[in-house]
Image 1 (cartoon, one colour):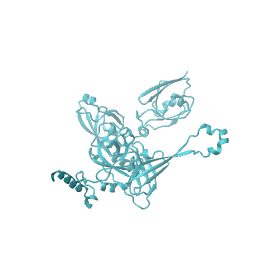
Image 2: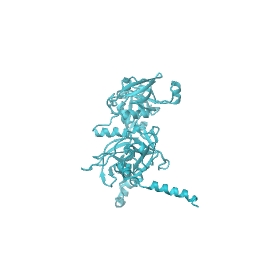
Image 3: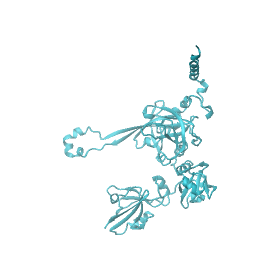
Image 4: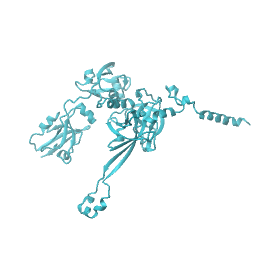
Amino acid sequence: MKTPFAPRLVALTLAATLLTPLPVALAQSVPASRADIAMSFSPLVKQAGPAVVNIYTKRRVQQRISPLLQDPLFQRFFGEALSGIPRERVESSLGSGVILASDGLIVTNAHVIKDSDEITVVLADRREFAARLVTTDEQVDLAVLRIDPGKEKLPVLEMHDSDDLEVGDLVLAIGNPFGVGQTVTSGIVSAVARTAVGISDYNFFIQTDAAINPGNSGGALIGMDGRLVGINTAIYSRSGGSIGIGFAIPANMVRTVVDAVRNGGKLVRPWIGAGGQAVTSEIASSMGLPRPAGVLINQVRKGGPADQAGLKVGDVVTAVNGKAVDDPDSMRYRVATLGVGGNTSITVLRNGREQTLALRLIGPPEDPPRQETILAGRTPLSGAKVANLNPALVEELRFDGADSGVVVLEVGRGSPAASLGLRPGDVVLSVNNVDIRRVGDLDAALAGQVRRWTIAVRRGDQTLTTTVGG
């Protein structure tokens, strides 16, 4: 008679064992390694949670008034009623952030605070502070804020070396999803070098299945040592909610932005003066490579750091500073996190042999000078603001194309250039079959008395040619 009840008794005994509170000493300690992970994440949350903040922004938007309402006759008869119509509305948004310095330095996503007029930071203990924007870096979707806590030191999160992360590691996401208040979700690292995402110019993300939802942007992704491994920035979703595919900016990229602020300087990333493409299986087979990996160099700027290091077209870059690279995005990320100054090593395959080259880490040069010019006169390009492309301007504009030539920066509304269909980002190739390499060439080509104009521009991957006049 006792036999049928034995399984139930065992189950109840096991449940009671699992529900027994952990010893106080164990519950309050932070695991020293992956092998020491406890059943509860509570110690990690208690350590990291106070340093994760809620961010609320307000943006004033001027409302468009119907032309009918602006009519003087309409205003005469209905002016008093119209006076009650608001001329602007206030748009609010929310997000999260992480305190990285006890004096009030906070990092969040650039898209969280973009175009905001007011930024309010709310701490985990509900204290509120007005925040000012210190710097924003839309290329990596990061922004740095500062609040004034007075004499009180704020809780902070230390940053972990995000290169130590491995697929399968446990992580926690802390933020303010949907504005419900600080929320903690858990998951694992699904990938550590996800590049085909298209979220920012520096495509290199930690992927996690920890639930991340709207409002989590700018919040913390922490490892099992309670330190910051990434800033949650985006999700892949068809419904707007989490489906287990979230992305975080690695802490090592966050560190470069924060260090620039702490050092009081402008953020400048290294420029190598070379570009390439991912090695596909077809390229690997044609080159006799064991597998498709690395970046096949297809352009090297003369006199640039890569050229001085001895990098050549046809080389395959397999590592930067000892870290493997599999595509141009990962190579760009590895270089960007090193900062300007000193040297680093790049590993290349050349004719089947591996070599290590010393690459100098310098910022992008202003060579040639930009020579920004607003074109005038009786020409089809009048009203366009143009400049000489150089590496610094290419980096500033996030220009995806050649780093030389004459680029259109702005087009005046209602100008001949606007009527021609010219757009910012267009590169002027030729005017009346005269090649344009510098702003001076363009000025000279437009100086003559010409009745018929043939103008060629490059827009993305296309070359567009237009003829005007007769």
